[in-house]
Length: 240
Image (cartoon, rainbow, N blue to C red):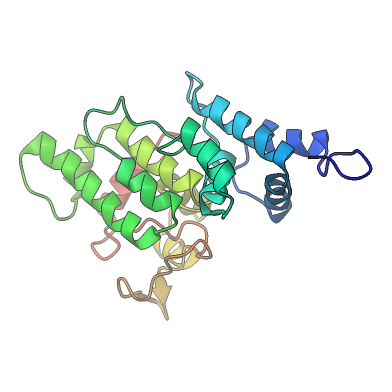
């Protein structure tokens, strides 16, 4: 859509800025450009074409910017743009039709709609189901010996879902990055991701933050009341 001065309400430079860089987190400036583009018909067209094209690439080059855009369009009152997006990408940014072990579509749906508490519970359930399918033992939570039964591909997908639908703030790999940055000190990690209250582990679920405003790495929770050994093994399986 063009203004009265026959100029686009956004520049080509701004368009390139949001799609050519692989952002690890989304800044307020970038989000403002996206919001401005989504107001205008031409911007909507460009944005949908970009994220649809990337979602269909064989190398699955999905970026956190794509997840944020998808969330914004789904949350909008503009039924036209929402319908256009859902025609192209009805299930979200990631297509799970090739995943036979377990379906992550329900997890994707919850994260798209920012239902982080429900998504956290489902994440635990999905990982337990993977271990159950390989050990024939029922699991309500995971021990460090169970991590070996979780394929890295599954762990990568779960982590990617959390990252792309949280502006890059949440995910196991985000927690690992903070842990390493703080010399692999667990107390420092708990402090940085806000799992402590007056030096004591917060009570689940009421004292945790279930919104996008939570600190970086706050979610997902992972055996947070059962010691560090399982999380240590999980971190060791993250190579991305």
